[in-house]
Figure (cartoon, rainbow, N blue to C red):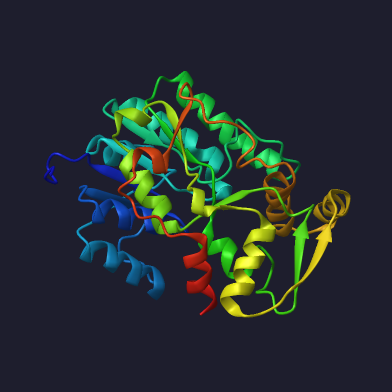
Length: 309
């Protein structure tokens, strides 16, 4: 077993965000010297202060710095081997600042930009998701143009975001909306598992300059199959209401943010099949469960049971 000194030092940017906190936890749990970039190591917000205390209690080093402060970014990057960005949607384009800092630091062995969703180079998304995916794709091109070693972690929904309500605004009680015919497979992966795979890929030569796809067979289900599992686990019977693609496109156009973004991503996944409509070729990607069979991935059935109990 590698000691902590043998493992890559990892910096997480966006550490207190939705997926960031899971990635920090996974990095520390898997024995990497872990650094979290934070604007304020002693925030006034009690929830954030509690989160940062939990980071420190697990051995994480808090590094004062800011995405928009180049010198602090370069300083933080110089002490690590791997940089992982988990910044949110409004900061995706600003990852060019991380790329510039990585180039100046000159020591980074791997950069994992903020992806954690559809493969943005293989998508049929409509607006507004199309533009968001376009920003992620432009960050990929900038990384590649600068010759920075990378891994893109993609291919699944966050299960904790989607499954408690089965993709609806609120948990279903008697009815469920199903997009299209409901037989297009989607992939849902628990946030802890997503993060574990991310950290495992961080210095794995098999994932160098490739996409790591999360496509566990037990987590690849159609909406109809998800609803049937939900009914089996909860004992509820849901009336299935099927929405055509035309109806969905109209709803996307008429919905405010962020609902229109969520619906347009659902359109790409459940109508266009963007999670599963292509074969993972060795030239551009590897599949997580194939190269990390030792990771016990929570199944959708287990997760529905957890969220509905």
